[in-house]
Image 1 (cartoon, rainbow, N blue to C red):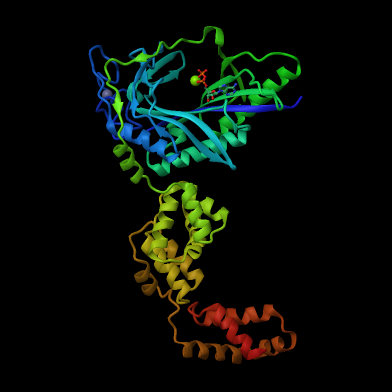
Image 2 (cartoon, rainbow, N blue to C red):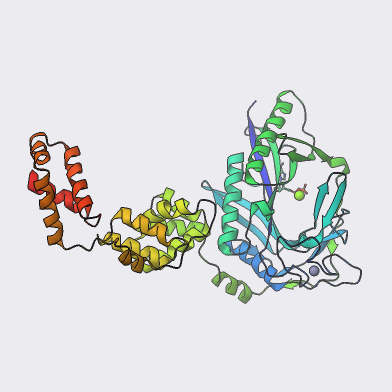
Length: 470
Ligand code: ADP
Ligand code: MG
Ligand code: ZN
């Protein structure tokens, strides 16, 4: 039987605020366990939460980046459940009045509808070692935004590929908007995936299965395909899908039941009496809108339409915000966007393979590119120069001069060298005149380059030789 696949995503991302959501503890990853907590974020009785305004602003910013409506009044509620990573036995979250509602995200020409983005606090982290489980509350109280797609509206996310595209674009938007770092290895972005199947074309939705907290996009991809196939097999055999929450085991490459609908928790949400409602004015929204820097889709439009880059090159540059920032800086210094893109997608990217920093200044790179364009620096020498100054404070121009890398020989000197070579290699010259073999011409160019210690311009030499010998 043929099925339509319907996928709903719930995506959590930690905001990159300076402090936690309801206390003044630092929002910082990688501290020693339980060293970054206070009575508020470990939930000691009597401690009172104070809302971090920066977290609210960044939530609004995330929403504006995807065309969400902003609720003028938003409230915090208590989501009650018992688990050791949650010291208060409730999480401060939002249900009825989240900050952002009704947005969308465009993937592959489809505008995927999104219900909401709400602000909540992250829980602590359990660490299991053999028979012992330990708890680190440093992450407790870190501001978290949860985005929930609306799988019951069309168009749907229908495949693992589309889900990954959605997550990839969402991650880029958060990073470009400057609201979250979304480093996947640090668990700063995590997704729950809801999947159901229905007979092809049917209007009625199937029973959904939820897979919780899958780490990393590769695992999300595998988990989705596994779940689609699992449901297909059950339905093909005439079975029914159980509404349940499953856990993905990445090592085994399969999922297993965590809990079924029957015993699913009732979170008993109610407004948190410790926190007053958030009021958001039109002026607040305008101000945040103005502070929003260009997003990947807008930049892609500029790169392809105005700068004439290929879609591929534009995507390569935009895949990493630090590359795109660097590219924009270089284009501002020297308005040759295509040439600069070529250098960045080859020479620069090759040198930052392991996600390292760009270890050259825009000024130095542009000096090199310009000097090559002016034919005063050979490409080979330019690459050598790039390697010399990469990761140092050296100045490109000074190094090029002091190391004799510039093609600053007089035209007359070069012509003299060329004439010498023609005399010395008279036999080869005769052979070329007879055979017109381009390999021989290349050999002669090589001889001139060698005699000029690499300072001549190979293309120019080639041209002069052609004129002289043809
Ligand atoms: P729950 O209360 O179980 O978390 P929600 O209503 O909050 O369920 O929905 C969670 C996610 O699942 C949302 O993205 C929602 O759009 C999606 N979803 C709801 N019904 C279905 C379905 N039949 N198939 C796939 N996804 C669904
Ligand atoms: Mg849910
Ligand atoms: Zn704290």
